[in-house]
Structure formats: structure tokens, C-alpha cells
Amino acid sequence: MMGTEVSVYLWSDDEEAGLAALEAVFQEADRIDRLMSTYKDDSEITKINLGAAAAPVRSGEELFGLIARSLEISVLTQGAFDITYESVGQHYDFRKHQRPDVATVQSELENINYRYVEIDNVTRSVSFRRDGVRINLGGIAKGYVVERGISILRASGIENAIVTAGGDSRLLGDRRGRPWMVGIRDPRKDGEVAISVPLQDEAISTSGDYERYFDEDGVRYHHIIHPGTGTPASGVHSATVFGPDAVTTDALSTSVFVMGVDKGMRMIAALPDYESIVIDANGRVFYSDGLEQPGKPAAD
Ligand code: ADP
Ligand code: MG
Image 1: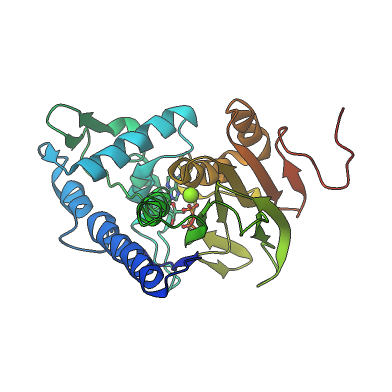
Image 2 (image 1 turned 90 degrees about the vertical axis):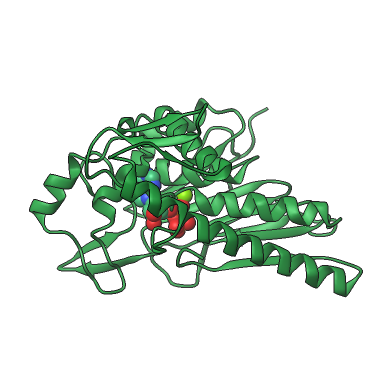
């Protein structure tokens, strides 16, 4: 979905029930993709993008809820997370190595500001305060798929599972008596793991500049846009966030990537349930305060 892979591992004593649960999660991912993909002409989000500057567009509860959550996270991250990044983002095609020219970036930059998105909780409608604004939930929708997937598995009686969509995962229970080991990829060595983290009953999201990108004249053009410049954020190679809820870890990993090590870690420090590991552009690894650093004795 949305250009990435959804995967599910689970334990079940009943093979048929286990396979049915898997299938239910994939169907749910498809359903959410149809609702939230900007590549589909008839998706709810496309209707908003095409109509919301002219008149308020009513939307379904789920999409509306995710847009509202995105706007809250924009406030929390002081605008680092901003679904209107799409005003510029729509001009990229990473597969075709296409990017907007400087003039396009400059003019579309005027359309990036989450405050241009107005929501009405009573009518559940969305409007744009400005012509040309576009939104995209690519930085938060996969976390939502993961949360929905875990809920479906739980409701089917599954107690040990992992659901992944792109860089976002949530673990249900443990790995039958041991914690799940989740690898954070080495951002510059394909297929290699830089750090393994033992986790259970938790969500973990990684945003990296190696997921969707192309290199041109020594510059990496990737899919995480700094809303202040309208160009790919630099300074970080990958940002990982873990905590109780995959929707939040998804949005926050994108945010920490944009904010950089200092600002990002300061924000995470203010959120007691969330921790972060950042690998910067020099390959240095930073851990948020709540984590014990490997090799360092724990404080008494
Ligand atoms: P992944 O897609 O690899 O899981 P992310 O969760 O970081 O990685 O999501 C990146 C996606 O977020 C981009 O493909 C784009 O759709 C969206 N995005 C890019 N920049 C921003 C931003 N500043 N704020 C919100 N969403 C963004
Ligand atoms: Mg994200």
C-alpha cells in the first residue's frame, strides 16, 4: 500500500484462524489505502485536495480523525510535521528521478502551512484557506494501518504478532517468552542492521532518507520534506521513535527527521512515553534520555 510493503507475523494454534486473521489485516490495509491514497482519483483525500479551497468538503470519520491528529502533531512539533508539504511533494516522482525546479519550489512553498487547513468538528468537513494547498497523509497513514491491523488481530484472539507497514511496526505481546528484536537499518549499508532493540507491546517507526530517493550530482533527493524550505530535510540519515501508539510514532519519526538531533531530542524528552534513536549525517548515533546506551553502565 502507498508504495510500501505490509507484512504480518503471528502465532496461532489454529492454522485456518491464523490465515484468516492475516487476510483480514491485508484487506484492512487495502481499504485504508483506497481512502487515503493521493494517487487514486476517487479517494476521499483526492476529493479534499481538489475541492477544499473552493468549499468545505465533508469527509468520513477516519480520514477526518487522522487529519485532526496531523494538525495536533504540527502544533507539537512546531510545524516540522506538516501534511501540506504535499504542495511541493506532488511535484516529485522518485521512480522517474523527477523533482521540482527552484521556481516551482519557491511558489509552492507559499502553500505549505498546516494553518491553511481548517477543520470543522461539527460537520466533519475540511477546507483550505488558500488556493493551491495540497495535503498528503503519507507520514502518518501507515501508522494507522498498523494500529488497525493490531486491533483486528487482538479481536481475533491473537496474542503474539508483529504488523509492519513500510517503516512502521507494532508488536503484540512478546516473541513467545522473549522480547521481539527489532532492527534499525544501517542507513548507508543496504540490508545491514545498525542497532537491534528488544521490544514488546510497543510501536516503533523509522524514517530514513534511503526509503524513496534518487541521487543527483552528489545530492540525495528523498521523500521527507522540510516545510520551511520545501526541499528534502538534511542533517539526519534516520530517525526512530518508539512508544505506545503507532500513529504517533509514525508522525514523530518523520518529525524528528525534519527537526534534527537537538530539537528532535528535546521534543522527545518532553514526551514521557516516547523514546528516540537518531543516526545523523555523519553516522553518529544519538539516544534519547530515557534509553540506556549500549556499553554504558546504567545509572544507579
Ligand atoms: P516511510 O514512508 O518510509 O515510513 P515516513 O513515515 O517518514 O517514512 O513518511 C515519509 C512520508 O511522509 C513521505 O513519503 C511523505 O508522504 C510524508 N512527508 C514528507 N515530509 C513530511 C512532513 N514534513 N510532514 C508530514 N509528512 C511528510
Ligand atoms: Mg513517519
